[in-house]
Image 1: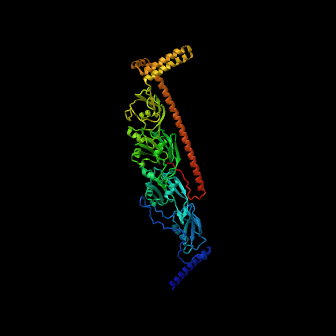
Image 2: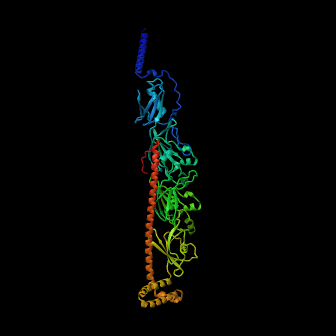
Length: 623
């Protein structure tokens, strides 16, 4: 009996405690707003709104994105993770008081009614909905929570390596099709002004951080996209990704020309600065435009042309042959088989590219006409042995000058400056000037004066034999600014000396009437003697030449010094003219740049009138 009473008392105590707990819960819930609107039974989840974005399930534990080359791309459908700056819409079925937009705070939390702070940093939409559901379960009967992104936070993306403008970019994702659209790899490369020609398109790296683990490095082959149009290579970029374009170990010139017209390559219409040295007519720094070069006898004109995308032909590229043309063309001593392009790549290293322009001429190998980029140095070496059979072929190429200037001084029919082809030989130049003056010229030898790059003048005596062909000893090819000196024969020197000796006497005799007749007769006698001397006995000529040999030598020395002074004066005038032409070219380049700036300003004004969807904020990194 006592045990039964004790059991009844314990049961009554449990019932009383249960009643008190239920009463306290009812009192607490009665203080909540709109209690009558809360569902009393576990209703099924409402039908999905067709305009509401589909939320994919979270990836399984341990899931990682596979590296790709030509096979598997990054998974672009991975669930979006929430973070500071996101603005979301929270929908609790049947509770409109709590269903509204919320801002994710700096610490990655939401401040929600009743439950207070909830951390959703790094969670997917479904994971965030599950966390909020569990927090509301003590207060709402069967809460059905849906989380939607209204405005996604700006994403930070880094670009490094062989891009025109490396740095950190902040992008605002856009809403598209009811979801959040992130930028793709090619869109980010376009924001960085494209990949340089030194970049390795086959091994573009995307480095993606992962929570609680090492970063994921994935390789993308953009050359595969150019070859096959494989859109899987244009992967979606996420917040915190870093895009790295490495430097190509070996330059594939065919691929470089193919990618020149791609929208994610560096702008080929932008002027670039290069340095051209070696065997060119005007070595030095130059600005090469992506333009069509039209040449005239006076100057080289530059004008912009467009890319014919309909025909698939790319014209006006800043190639090495275009640069050589702007530098006045190569000389006849150039070794076009060992042309070097020295290029500074990211990281401060130097890349040397060998170019064989002879293959371009003989085999039509267009891959040798390499695209230049900003800061390249082009070196044209001097040939150890010049193959004279190739000189004419090289001289007719587009990267040789149209004409060179030479000067023929002395006893020829038409002395003076001449414009001749670059492959012109010494014999051809003499014939162009009308050949020798048969009465006055020394026809067995001529002198060739050449201005060296160091400012000195070399002087060679060349035996003339028109029966010989092209050879470096007796019939060399000429260079720009060469001077050919055709000396007087010994007989012409004697006749000139006699005339110079008689000129003062003749002048005095002219003023003295009494002696004028005598001097005139004497002059007539001397003239007859000269005619007899020039066309008569050889022995008397030699005797007179021996008598006046010393005086002739002194006269020759004076003439040589005078000729050298004239050559130096002409060289100074030519250098001044070259500087003037360079200043004119520079002014023309400045005018073209001003036109470009004006066009860019107009484009920026047009773009400012339209809503910008993506605005990069770059932080330039030093390579």
